Image (cartoon, rainbow, N blue to C red; front, side, top):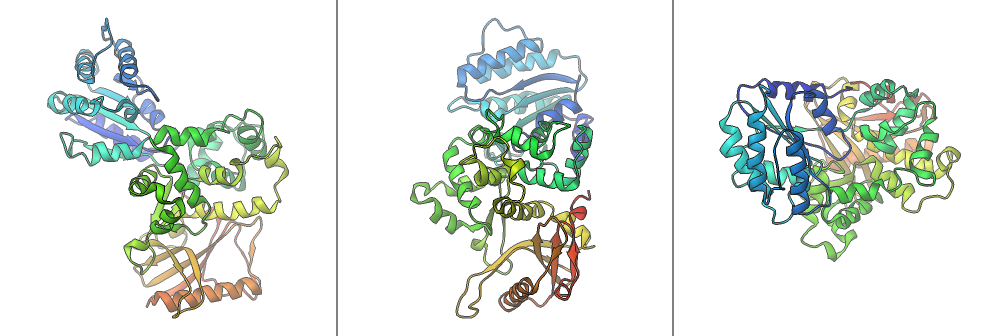
Length: 471
């Protein structure tokens, strides 16, 4: 298995515990949650079950009956309620000969259909039976991270503080994608891996569909642009599987996809219209919990000035290229040098950098220094009539603020006189408005470094794509 070392260590620690343990494992769809659990505990399960998407209470219970029978239960009929289903589960688990009885319930949010009382049955199963034993490892898993947070972590009832371990499974980093590509026999340069990351993010399921022997462009065309491409409908399936009101969530990410610099909550509210009044807070929280959207405070501003940005690479790609998909089945192969691709690449590279801030800190040699990452922007006003926007500001405890400029070019980035003037203006506005007493350093994050010339001396530090690949 590539990566997931900390998660494997934690699961094995919980397996070796002398108490019963209740684990909540969550992460966005396709990130590898089920694969992780099955790899770690292969051959050691007492019971496994996966909820069924789009099925009501009766269908869920019938499906649960099949799992009970598969793991040794005798079920003449399907259970009539979740209380009955979990009572039958107790018998199956108690009969298991495994010394530690691993109970894995996957996609539980799908099981919790309206008025099904599934959550209260789980509560009784844990509080009244499993927690009283010493030999149960209960793992509840879900892609709907917002459901996991609301119903397990913030539960005000019988499951309050009952979860003994939380594991948030994150997408692969560039380093892990490189290892995964090598394991699957994909001959990819680091530029290929970076571009693939900008299309699919670090989602193992998507990378698994890449074919050895084909170029990256051929793979992207085959997966997304050819007739009957298998991932053409992935966007809709992804959001519908995670969010009950998927249309509202899609509306918010559509607004964010059109704003390179991100949006404040009030800006999002204005963009999506009055039809979402009363639900925007929940929608944003759901998107954040699932890893599609991230927020960062603006340096020196009030909390309400928090900026939300679209972080999900595939969602951004969808809105750039798949809303009105091209008719050419070789679109990606034949548009390498197009302005549209160049504009997307620049924006997507900024997102890639924001997902690798720890690697940027390490490249700057300050990974051991307390530092916080912010967004920053200034709207022209009477005090300063020039506007400016910075996607990444690193405020360090050692008296330095790094203003990061992120540029993706095929070769070393060259600062010309026009670019230098813009950088100087941006730094001047930042210093005047932010009023920081710290030293302001300009950091260039460029895929292939910086071409040294008479305009490049303003740059104090450099971070390259190779730096972002470091673990």
